[in-house]
Image (cartoon, rainbow, N blue to C red; front, side, top):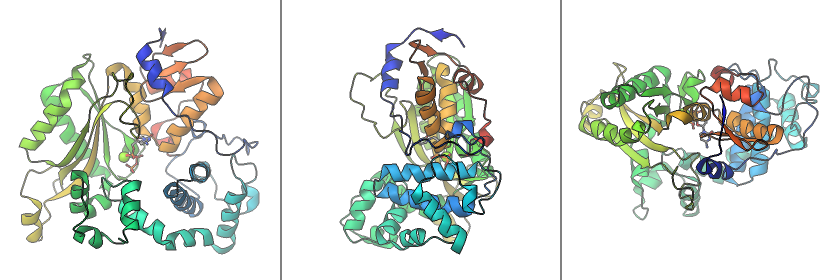
Length: 397
Ligand code: DCT
Ligand code: MG
């Protein structure tokens, strides 16, 4: 790729990115283990689930309590352990690993000695944690709503559903309606079937469109919580027309159980962004689709009540995210939407701290040369960042 002139629009976009600070001082790393996930290979073969499961519970609790620093420390530590090719058996194995401070070491010590951690048990028994965990698994329910419901004394799904004073968004109504289906997650075969339905719909209107399954499934996961689809068109600007056409088609086919559209905020850099909690400026759609359970394809058959009352589940509700990006940003969007979250976080941190560059889902900016670096593939992006290419299946940080 050739460096290109600074485009003001992109520069402003990049200035808004929050680059996470390293949660703990840099410790000399244990033989070759980098503090950055984008310099580690992390397959799905996690040899340290005992520790990483515990860390993820503690991190989530810190997230609920809005202790960002501790949350990140535990997520980073879990991520480091996931990349190891051996199982931690004693405290000496942890020496020199980047970011392993006293709090983290204490939890590891407990787990090595007793096979369990009192801190984790405490969290799992904590009433606030249990409520927030339960409520935030409902599609459309964020931390604020979950906290509010907990403060109102609500503790169970039944209490939510039967409370006549609560007002629900359309996403929350659908989230409650299809709670079990969504909680059950998505299998790879189901994701492939949904990907085909998305392709069919998109190609009806634009046969040249590029439609890619991203997220955890691109990293080789056998299951996931949703299906992430990235869509672009080599014909400039054509992708902009797609979403509304696809939605109308699916409505006619009776495939849509719920959808929310976020229009692109790419051209609104001069306005205060209304979408601070979204990770990029692309047009996107968060939807729940009907997926056929048996034939492995989306069905437009009966409604849920008819089929379920007869004991035959004809379809399953599946969470789908559609993201539409301009062709010249495709490589960045693909890299961003492939994840993992920790991998993305560390890619941004690495670019900023080690290379004086900024990367987001739209572009790569070289702060020294003051240019945007054009990239047509993920390989090129890694190259420009001076990183060895990491395959998607090794980005499970
Ligand atoms: N992503 C990110 N930051 C966010 C949200 C998402 O970097 N705040 C990226 C990383 C993964 C990708 O988008 C898709 O997100 P998810 O679907 O939430 O994650 P996943 O890895 O696909 O995992 P899951 O199996 O839970 O869907
Ligand atoms: Mg996903």
